[in-house]
Image (cartoon, rainbow, N blue to C red; front, side, top):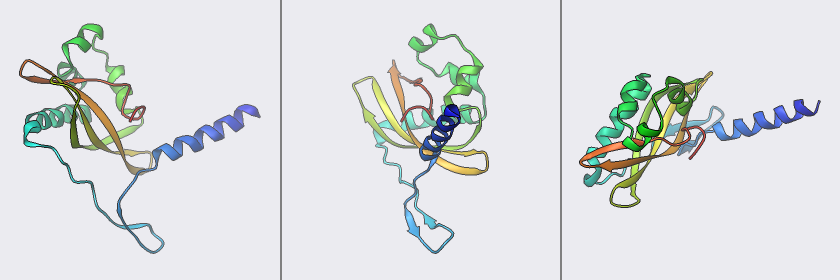
Length: 155
């Protein structure tokens, strides 16, 4: 019985985390009439990074994980040999990625940045959006991805 209560509480907590946000006009019963997606604000300085970011997430969306792995930082690849399961855990095994949109870039130092982005996905019978942060490193003239714990696990 105790485990049943914990399961119910855990399910409610997960449900709360899955609720997506949307700016728009709340209308009559039926929900939001119009959703206004956030407008990306990426400076010209990072347009090359945005292209690489889009390419990486297109590989992830198509489940071309080996190609995505090639875009990881040398440090990451040295410490982590390629495993398909690792990439499946990054986005979650029971979701289908619809789109990923970069919103803004925050510079950490000369070689590191964090991209704030939205992940649009379908899970079970609903569509949702999740904001996440993605770390990128500049090695020479090339931008490379630095994986985190997973999109649905960190923000």
